[in-house]
Each structure stands twice: as C-alpha cells, then as structure tokens.
Image 1 (cartoon, rainbow, N blue to C red):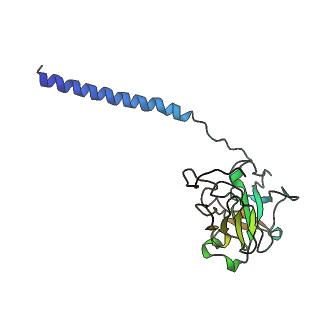
Image 2 (image 1 turned 180 degrees about the vertical axis):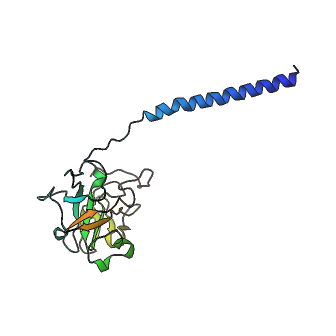
Image 3 (image 1 turned 135 degrees about the horizontal axis):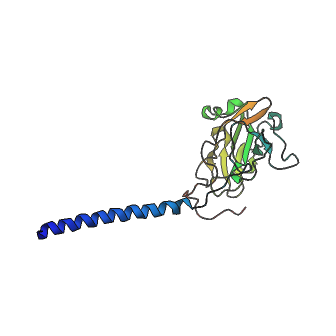
Length: 208
C-alpha cells in the first residue's frame, strides 16, 4: 500500500470516528435535556381559557363572579381572576392570571381594541411589563392604568400602550365576549403577560 493511500485511509477512519463521537455526544445530551424540571400546571395555575368567567380578586366580594353591572363606567378598573365555570376553580395560583376589567364608552375605544372588547369592556393583564408589579392604581384625571412602583402609565383605550414611565411594552390584552350579563374569556392573551426574559428593565427588581 502506498504512503498516499495509507494517509487517505487514516483520514477517512478518523473522520468516521469523529462523526460517531458527535452523534454519541448528542445522544447523551438528549436524556439530560429531558431531565430539566418542567413547570407544572394545576387547575389553579393554568392560564385563562375560552369560556372562563371572572371573579373579584380582592375586597369584600373576592371570589364573587363579575357581571357587567359590577364594573363602574369610566373606571376605576376591577382586579379579577379567571374562573373555570365547569369546575368552579378560581385560577389565582398564578400571578400572571391577574387581570384588569374596565368598562368604557364603546366610542372611546380604538378600532383594534374593539376587536377584543365586549359591551365597551376591555380586559388587560394586571402585571406590569417593567418589573412585574401589580398595575393596581387608576389615574382618574387621565383615565389610565397606573403602576405604583415606577409610575408607568397605560392607555386602555389604545391597547394599554405605554404613555409614561419605564415599561418596555403595553399590557397584553385578554379577549372577552359577553355571555348573558357576564364578561367571559374569548381567547388567550395577545402576548405573554408579565416581564419577558431578556427585556431591558433599566436595572433593578420589584419587591412591591
């Protein structure tokens, strides 16, 4: 066998072994990846789904189902959790399930907003997109949602777009429809609620 032929043969064998080792490594990594802990979902933590009703999240009426008549026209907004009407489970075990229900005059809503509103009522995530605080305050003068942590303001008539403060994006909307005298969930959030991984929050963390 010539020297050139022997060199070529060794190169081919080496390449084959290399490919084999690569495949073997990937095979070993696959089971490791499957061992990563997965976030478990329970009835209390599953996200809102079509047909869910809403209940008051706080106050004397906490747990009571919400009707359109319970919502004051022009605000303030009502903090609520979705509830599975079939099982009776209130989905309060997941922070990102907390929402804001607000009844406005239908003519005040933008055309895009009207697509996921019902009877002038809109529903948005109550979790600030900045650092995850609860957007639990209401600017009565401007009729906007106010986050108390860093004074983020969101306009509910325009898709909860950010009009002041550090939040990097609007509050996601939760589409609703009318079922008799009650607002009900008509679909999933228009975008992930809460703080997105990798989002520039201008430093810091929220402990409120």
